[in-house]
Image (cartoon, rainbow, N blue to C red; front, side, top):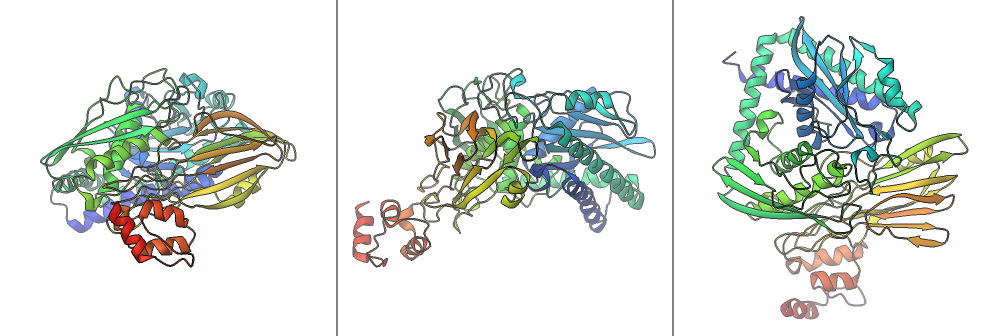
Length: 575
């Protein structure tokens, strides 16, 4: 169909978005697990019938799922047979367009007037899918089987009826199975809502108009992205990122990012990165590519999201590196941590080309902490999952935000009150990680501190975090942000994970505490260019000590907290 008027096109674009938004809201409001209902770790979208290309995704969905869900849907399409209305496939195989095993995808064929029109899909982070540790984040896994149950695309619902045999296989291989059935039905119900709303949209405008609009919206997104890319000077740009360790070998992993800009196209080459690793920091190719997509979307947020958005982005498969994981490499940290290092490498490369549109590195870790155990008061097992925020990097016009969500998503920390209600824990502290903002003309934002006390029973603590060895990168002369720290107080002694940010099955008992400090954002430009009055204000608010601002910003404060202008000028001149 041609000659679509702008008003109709805009209305249909908004209608597609609304279908996905309603799926998101239905999923959140009916899910049982706090990681979905409170932390919002999920996403919903509409995908093309032929190849699974993204048509639309909900505004409330995680950015990292933008790319992976279209790859995952494509894998289902390639394997799907004998389709009927009401069929729903379940799949979490990371090598088939996925992330890690805890991100479980439901994919449903959408029929209109008896014909396959598109696919609806969603992803929800399940608190547990079995494996060596509660919550699935096995920091020491050396093969994917240790991370949990791996499902190829299978029909969980056949013509609208749940297959009880498939369900029993799933529930027999995961912890707290009695609590999963609510999430499963919520995830399926969200697709049913999407089916109804999408049908209403097509009824209103007609299938030809909607199909024509989808094609036109894809073309326009590609054009908009190319227009944005054209602003970048032609050339070759280099960036890098580092993962603390793989959880098994205590050595950093390097991401080498080369970005070549030619005309309206960007070419990404990560083939110089570290080889495949023993531990779970390998990244499947769908996540690796999606990480590049979300990084560019952070830089150019105005471009609407659909498959056309990614057309000008050409990513060379980084075969032979830890960024192209193949079976049986473990991958539990790929979406939560490695993806964010990839995005940082993109930011670090392009900040040299378009400094006014970019920023220093954000905290860049999801801060995954899992506590699993048995609550004697409630006489049941539990898996508690914590996502934590961190500082954003400074930019050309402002300081970084404190306690912001991760680079890969809009997931937020589950409210403390909710976690204390659900699980046998007490949060004894929740505060800013003072001093963690990287120094710069525009400083980085601050991470957070939290301290959890186990109130009853025994439990196992596992964590897959990052930036414990290297803080988020400062840019253009700015300093790195503060690092991630984990301390576990048990039996009167302090335990520090050997890998700093990764460990598993640490036994804690009633009264023991877990203390976490998340990273701050990197600083933007030379910190000695920062207005001394702003530095003084930061000290007054308790963000930095007088010694820290002297060392990092070259500002000297006297015993009254006032700026010693002569000493400050002398110190800055010496530097």
